[in-house]
Amino acid sequence: MGKTKELSKDVRDKIVDLHKAGMGYKTIGKQLGEKETTVGAIIRKWTKHKMTINRPWSGAPRKISPHGVSMIMRKVRDQPRTTREELVNDLKAAGTTVTKKTIVSPTTLGIRRKPSGELSMTPREDVPKCPPLGQRGEL
Image (cartoon, helix red, strand yellow):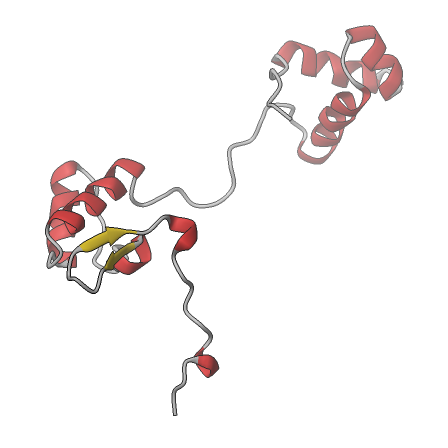
């Protein structure tokens, strides 16, 4: 199912005003030409948050942009012995300030070394996950 067009603020406010006047979801939807579920979602949002505008995404923003990640991947692929400190300095030169802890290891990014010694890029979904501590064969 594709993303639908966002309703304007005027339509959202009109839905809330009609709800305050005592009209039901179905009658509001018929009057404005919107689906009953859309009207209900807008009214529930207004009841809970007292606003009808769309809220921003939850969660913290990414520390490294997709451009920065591709820059890291390219540098590690071209120069496998690149240190995290060099990557931090490159990102700093590009305008992104991060610590060494933020830079993940190349294996996490999907870069693997073949038995012949050359590097290969593994698709993200094929990167194997580490087994839990008790299953690693440790003594």
